[in-house]
Length: 161
Length: 305
Image 1 (spheres, rainbow over the protein chains, first blue to last red):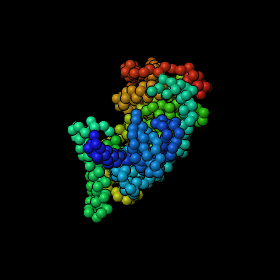
Image 2: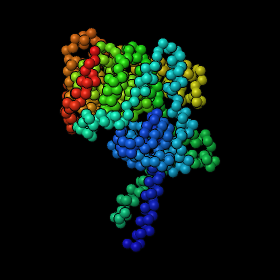
Image 3: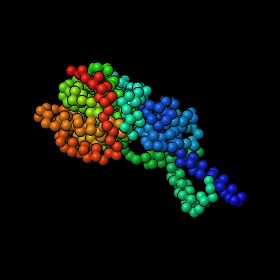
Image 4: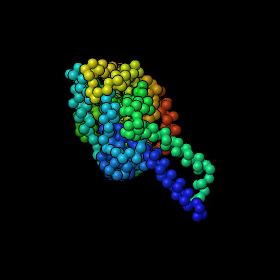
């Protein structure tokens, strides 16, 4: 057994090293989302995150990923809010920053964007976006949805998955 | 770690891991080489560029682009229908909708899901890309309980999850748009590119609105949305019978003859029912309707005129 100890240490180090190499950096692809304490939408919020911010994946479970933010906070995000970071795949990156680089912003913020909408609206002055903006303001707090589900015996409180 | 792990298969696995890791570091490596001056910045960009797929289809539309397309489609829908302004009812519909969204395949979109009631007797529901969901007062009156409302909202959420709106965009338009977007390096577009892109944007909206309001999606999309509705509603804890109960109200309906709203843009309720029964039969668990939900539905929707 004695002779195996250094080898075990070596392999352990190798596993840790490979783990670091494989650590996946994810980028937030939605305008804003919340890092949550548990893998459910009405779980307590750990931290708010916005588009372009990077997080490091720790594990995953049924549509949710457990991540660590650049400030060191850990929690859960739904996988539909993130995508695999395309530029630097390594979490070893010492400059792991919370703001996307200019090239990423250009890539993400281009295409059909605000500038195109403004140009389209200038051509169609009769079209109103007032209700579209009002609609976007309709937000039901997570606690209210949880209460609604609880009272209605939905989700984990009843016959849901 | 025990001594058994030292067997040959373990070494093979470790070697595989090392290989995989080396593949994933190509882009990072290019960055390091550029920083140390071993390759030029343009070389680095070329390496990074070739390691990314070129945008070609609807699936390459970014979340933010989908949001901007959805905003304008929503504005075009709202140009045709007035909004039914009732805060309590709108809140109720949004709460049911969000509960279903949580159990859907795609609960997070760029700006989330939002639900609005349209002030018309026409029986209709529509969803613009990104999660702008509309349900008419006429359709709400058809629903007799929360299960039916949840099923209809789940059908619309299904369209958003499966990106049926984006799939309605003609491929040639996307290829043109992606080319302009890909070659223009500046942060903001020049006037010529902007004019071209705006013109393509108009055509993109036209493609979606035509399917959404005028002609309806392909039948396979509607059946897919029905299947997703059954799945999402059941995952939320709603009885999937809400979907069949709703479709049954459409069978033999006189307004089907006039061919407005859902009657015009959706396959016949009979053909949808046939498939929905099969979708339900394949479910592992069948949640049942709860009287507490029907009670609160009647409180919220009951006095709708």
